[in-house]
Image (cartoon, rainbow, N blue to C red; front, top):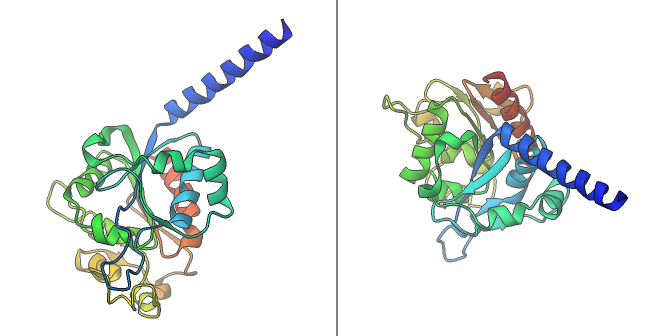
Length: 252
């Protein structure tokens, strides 16, 4: 009898957790299918695990359902070793099971999501930044009152999002991301020469009030302006996710 009662309690516990998550709502994470930059040396593009798994952990640990979408769906490439929060998300929160089955854009209904996040890695600059279907999803979530977040090179992927009035989503908004001043010092993309566009340049061209290191108290600060939440570098990716949750709850 005690075993049956214990089993019932366990079932009720999991039902309660499921209901809580459903009540919280869903968040969409956009990832890239691009593995390399197309150069002879095959410099890695892909997604940065440390900029995707920690935000995923923050979202699910706060009770949100998380879905992934990529331009062509399915499995996506990652760099970086699974340590810390990333390792926890993989081992205990089914990160791999979800991200390896990323949705195609046609399977995404923007009305189901309270926010959308794009992490770094160079990949999104290659196949997300000009994918009309993915950009339309981001625009629809934003215009439906949702929150848009990005870290590192992620903001460059939503620089080209256009709203229904024809304006770029980032126009007249404070936004940051991996800056030119750092890009030109790194060999990862041959000082930026392998990139289809320099992130900072594209955001500025589309009207964003790009925040450089000199504009911030600390280079790891998170910038929030009109439901867009961004940061320059990967150490703050989880903080972006937490601030996105704060924005969701503030706007409910």
